[in-house]
Image (cartoon, rainbow, N blue to C red; front, side):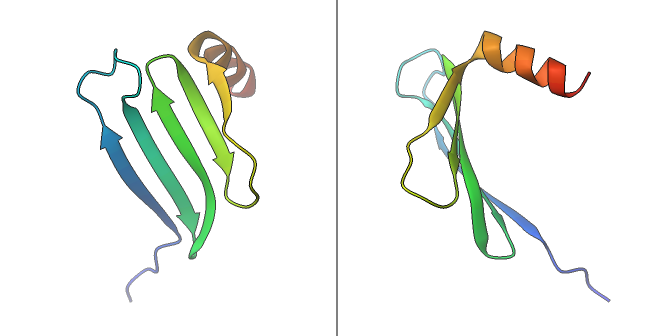
Length: 74
């Protein structure tokens, strides 16, 4: 019996050099056909947009992101 996939991630890459402004990686994350959110990874920050609503990206610099992740997984 084949397993049904629950999550899907679509990747869009715009990287000539990640050190340049405007380059980055975008991940659209869905579960069972419904978008959960979008992650944007760039040179200076990590961004998240909820799957629903019109709110813009919530961005955080890499130092703050690392601190929050360390707290969460500690």
